[in-house]
Length: 110
Image 1 (cartoon, rainbow, N blue to C red):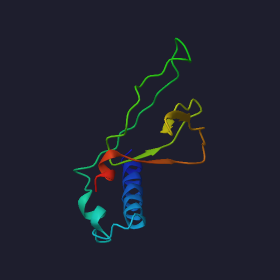
Image 2: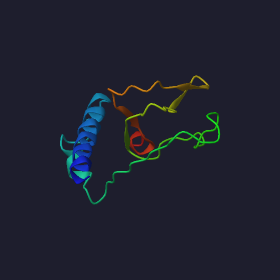
Image 3: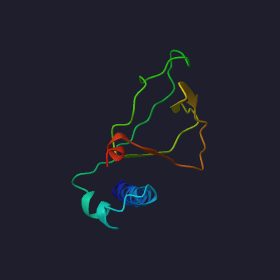
Image 4: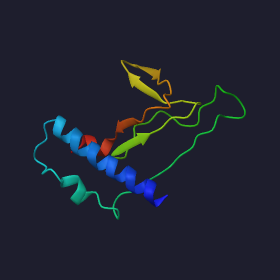
């Protein structure tokens, strides 16, 4: 678990650096995220949302934004991820060969 968490942390730091660079935010030196996002201030959260045993029409979460910095998501075959775009919810088809990177609220305020 520690190796997995370390690998994801390194991936998150690199993604954050690349995103900031692509967004034209050069106020941060190249290793800003490595120096700032320390193991003591960051966390790994793993969630599993199994299908509802009562009805496949029921969903477990209310519509929300991700309040964290970055989310690295691997969907299972159940899916359920939706994006709000142009005033409507659009389902994201699971792709077992891909990770979904979601920019959370904390990244957007940088």
